[in-house]
Each structure stands twice: as C-alpha cells, then as structure tokens.
Image (tube, rainbow, N blue to C red; front, side):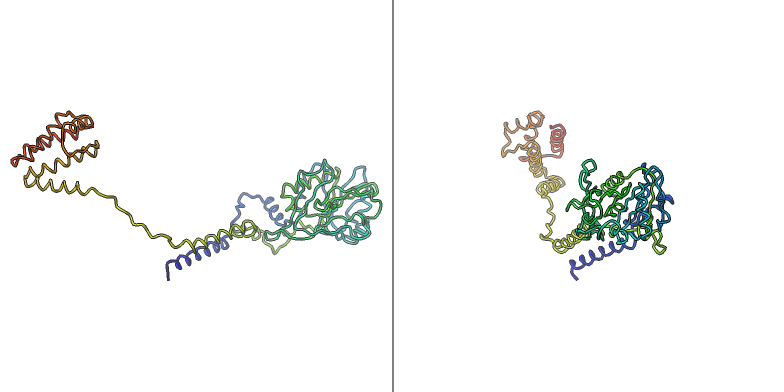
Length: 421
C-alpha cells in the first residue's frame, strides 16, 4: 500500500472519530445554577409554538389590573357583565373550537362594552358564521410574511418579517389575511390596524360590536414563543396590546399549547435540549453549507496536495577555508622538525592573510606604502611592523634561524594581534 493511500485512510478514520465523538458525547448544559422555577420555565419554552413567554410577560403588563385564566366552556366561565370599566378577553391559538353557546356568551360579553382579542389562523364555521357570509380569511402562499401597522404613529421602523423553519430551512406555507368583503354588517364598523405588506392585505382588524370591540388577528404565530424571542417580534406584540384598554383580563386557555411538552410524560426535556456541536452545525443551513465546504476542501487538499511537486533540496554545507587549515598543519609539522626557515614562509602567509581579512589590504610586495597603510589602519607603529617583515625576510634567507629568534618574532606578532585596532 502506498504512502498516499495510507494517509487518505488515516484522514478518513480521524474524520469518522470526530463525528462519532460529537454524537456519542453531546454538549451538556450546565444547569447547576438554575433554580427549580427557571428549570420549569426552560422546559416549557421547548415548544416554540407555545404561549408561555407571552403569559409571563402579561403578568407584569401595567395595563392589566388582574389576569384570570378561564377554561372551556366559556359560556359558564366568562362573565358578560360590564361594571363601568371594560374587561378584555384573550384567545390566541392555531384554531378555534368552541360551541355555539360559547360564541353567544362572547358576543354578549363584547356587546355590553367589553373587548375581545381573538388571534387564530382557522376561524371555524361556528365562529365565522356570526361575523361573515362565508370564510373570514383568505390565504397567500410564501416562505415568509411581512407585516406593519397602518397608522403612522404605530408604524414600525421596518416591517416585521417572520418565517417558519423546519430543520434550518424556511417552510413554504399559507399565511392568512382577512376578506373584509365577506364581513356582515356596516363596513364602516371595521378598521384595518395591521397589514401584510407584500400584498397590502389586512391581518389585524378592529370591529365595533354593540358598545364594545372585537380585535381579530389572522397570524397567531406572532404571539408564540419563537416570535417573542425576536426583538422585532417583541416590539410588534407590544404595539398590538397597546390597542387594548386597561382593566381585568381573561385568558382563555383553549388548548394549553404553551405547556404541550411539559404535560407529555413520555418526553424527557433533558433529551430534547441536549445537542452536540455537530448537530447544532448541521441544523442551520448556513453553518451546514460552511461545514460541507470545509470538509470538501480538506478532501481536495489531501487528494491533490499530498504529493510534493518538487524534490527535497539537500542541505548545502557552507564552504570552509581549507587552505588555512592546511597552512596551520604544515607549519606545525615544520615547527616540530625545527626547520624554522620553512615554517617562516607559512607564518608570513598567515600574518598577511590576517591583515587582508581585517583591513582589506593585500600586496605582492611589502614596500613602504603597504607598511604605512597597515600602520594607519592598525594603530601600530610603522617601525614595529617593519621589524616583523624584516625578520621574515632574514629568516627565509638563513638556515640557522634559531628557536630563540623565532620566539622573539612570535612575540612581536602577538603584540600586533593584541594591540591592533
């Protein structure tokens, strides 16, 4: 098996181990500092289509004197009397499923001077037949919806853009708006408060009924937890509730959608909220694309860059001055044999080489000009330098150059080495 194949197999094994490690050991959530009440709230918020976050916010809303939760059927749980100050009925859900008696109770509640906010997608026939000739809503299909308020003082800086997601992708789905031409009664009793901006279709309307008012909203998704976690969604819901009066509020817990997971005994919230890093990346489309590009890039690099395009360049050792080493060895040989007249020749070459490297002075003939130049650059008296070269000259002509004379010459040269600039 070639080295290339071995490296490819090793890279594949490392990638598989990394992916397996992330799935086997998902990212744990540090919940050591979470109180029991916070833990309960966190578990309820698992349902992105729930209303628990809105409920918690309304408990602190200054316009609400008291917040009372009422159950089905409202014909027995919703008081219809008017005590001089309007009460508010809230129903927010995906659809509405109430009896004719419950609808009659709600109509009487509003007719007496109270207010009702009904935000549902599907107004069923039992409910819509009291307000419209046929269906109260029509549909537009898109992967997003953009809404804003009609009154300039309530208008958002930018329309609120909302989308539903599934596995990181926008869902192409239907969005409801009101068909005002289908409403019964005087059209002057209807006022459009909010519209879907792409087609300028009404999604939030106000209708006078008796001495009270109905507020209908065709997009309950805007009140769900997922929307309220968005700052633009939070601002939108704030402006919707600013249309409602101060007083006593009745929240109709129609299907308890906000607590859907908390009531499911077979669902372990810990298993839902745990998520490995690789799962988090693959869940989001942008991160998933970036991750795939990274993996493909690594594979391409391994396939095309693993082979060297140029042979390894051998290390070149720096050149050494072997001539100097040879001179030193030969000089030592002559010195041991006491052939000083031969040694002097190499000794002079070594001295001249020193002057050449240090002062950049070289000559084929040692004359007065050369000696003057060496004296100026070295700072040694010309007379001392001249004596050295005179000794060299005399030693090369005499076979009887003694060791004592050689020692004296050496001392003069050492003086030069130690005192030159």
